[in-house]
Amino acid sequence: MSDQEDDIILAELDDEELVQQMFDDLYDGLREEIEEAVNILLSREWAPYRVLTEALVGGMTIVGQDFRDGILFVPEVLLAANAMKGGMAILKPLLAETGAPRVGGMVIGTVKGDIHDIGKNLVGMMMEGAGFEVEDIGINNSVEAYLAAMEEHKPEILGMSALLTTTMPYMKVVIDTMVEQGIRDEYIVLVGGAPLNEEFGKAIGADAYCRDAAVAVETAKEHVARKHNQATA
Amino acid sequence: MLPDDKTLTEQGFSDVSSGRVMLIACGALAHEILAIKRLNKWDHLDLMCLPANLHLYPERITDAVEAAVHKHKQTHRNLFVVYADCGTGGLLQAKCAELGVEMVAGPHCYSFFEGVETFAAHDEEITAFYLTDFLVKQFDAFIWKPMGLHKHPELRDMLFGNYTKLVYQAQTQDPALEEKAKDCAARLGLAYEYRFTGYGDLASALKAQAEFT
Image 1 (tube, rainbow over the protein chains, first blue to last red):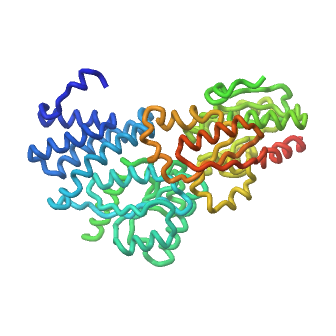
Image 2 (image 1 turned 90 degrees about the vertical axis):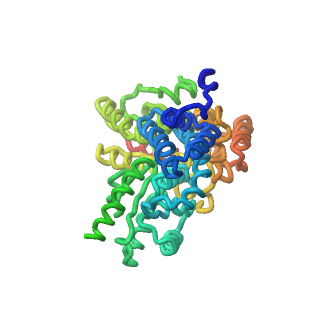
Image 3 (image 1 turned 135 degrees about the vertical axis):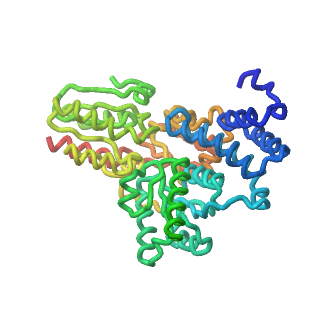
């Protein structure tokens, strides 16, 4: 960061400039600056949901796009996510109080045998940012753990993640069990992880493969909207 | 002569003389393949290594191997791909089947060095992070720097917090490397375990190629 940027006083920026600065600060993974900016926007009577969507999610979408295009790499994305987390921690209790719109619910976790949760955490955070209620059941989940979480939280979406070639077939075990139990069609099943691809997603009977967190959010929104339309048709 | 590890990581390597069997391999395996060749006097095995750092972008491995197969099938009667699945999600195996070339079995070099069956039996080891001789030597280039830990050490627990131990699978007995591996474990905040594997299934896979021709 240049000396000139060091001199920026966030509170002196107008709203539009501040949001642009937040995009830059998210991109640079500056957690304290993001927390300060969130508090400034709230003090200017911005609704928590507006801060979330216009500033944080807007900024993270740019980070996601540049990750997809190979401009940013995992460390930079993690720093950005950490900065967003700081902002989310301020907004979360306020969102609950102010009744922000709920888009849908999601249970998400990595599959049995897999402890790699960076992608899963990013998806969970971006989904929360997009208005989904996310129940993160962590790492190394058995089929029983997924089913229990779905039974308890009744989400629209089940998200499964795997980084290893050896663990990704377990997604099919979960989906097959859902079919056996006659509950497969009650859920939208989204899968993701580095070694997966669209063909694999189709082959195991998932609704969609999502190549990154931004795609996961868009795919989730489309599928939930379609489901709601079918329900009301 | 084998180039240094930096060259193997970033550029790859080619040692072609016999024109009979071409091994298309990962640069991270060059030392081991040449050692096995030397020990057995398998001079009819040629070797070309793709850059080891392709592992940082596993989605690029299949295309790179395919290009190498097309290039060398003009000059060699038999080709053998010395990669495991290596994070390609089965795509490398499918591509090799389509091209009519064989490859090493298993998900990673960690598994074939230890023996694919033995490795698969380690159900309790899902929180183990593995290093081979090459990866110990290239720890900074392969892990520390690409993960951004040289600039942002605070990311360590986000990246490695779910791991509990580092297992050094040693192909050679080298006290200096073992010390370095211990240091790698300490830097990642993980417990350390030493496991001598030798060349494992890699030796038998190359033997099958050497004797087939």
